[in-house]
Amino acid sequence: MLKKNVGGIDRIARIVAGLALIAMYFVRPDASILWLIGIVPLATGLMSTCPLYNLIGVNTCPKG
Image (cartoon, rainbow, N blue to C red):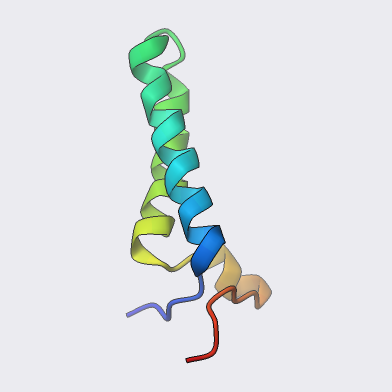
């Protein structure tokens, strides 16, 4: 299981950005690659973990 390393504002921003990119598919269906790109921030925001953050040693979760 991956350790949670995405927290607070970072998590909300990822979810909003992911949903916005996925919504672009319905606004402009010819921009189909955008919704695929939107899956990444949405998934990392919902799971509260980012593999890239693990690689570079970033953690935005508060100490708890």
